[in-house]
Length: 204
Image (cartoon, rainbow, N blue to C red; front, side, top):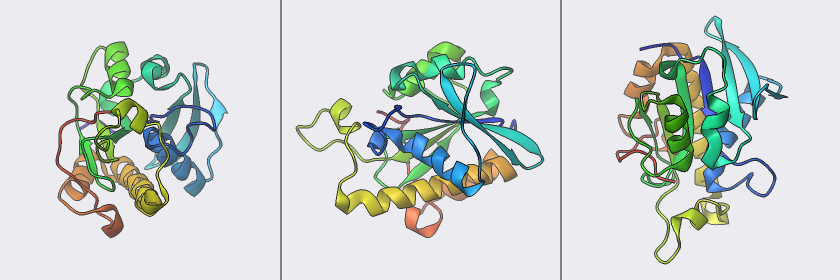
């Protein structure tokens, strides 16, 4: 497997969306930047990036500022990007809240951010870290659901999921995707240091 060189967290920019379910990718990268005292800067394209020195190389953390449906416009402008070295962190309606799972490729599963990246890169062959938000309650459209904040009773699980996701990214960068998949796809939840979950590609 190719080493990860770019970690892209998906989300929508601005305070209106900061704590919504759809912004788990942004929240994971924000936590990584705090852990490693990284500084965000406006990249040449429509994105923010931070440079993280890890495992003897520089990893680019990338947050598209294009809004979710045009995420691929930012990703495709990363110089020298190899899809196999891109790890995309996104929310996932098909996994229960608090579960996460690595996947090496596949379709978008209805996730507009992933669909945009697939279209712009011309390939589905890039790794993803899928963060479960649970399905939309009956009677609520999923497009509205993903743009809601986590209620008080789910905030603890959401915070634990972001912590676990940051741990998972660190492991994938330092020891490789195979090691990360062995640990995080084998079972468990965000509270035990080994979140996982079966399901199809993220839909959001």
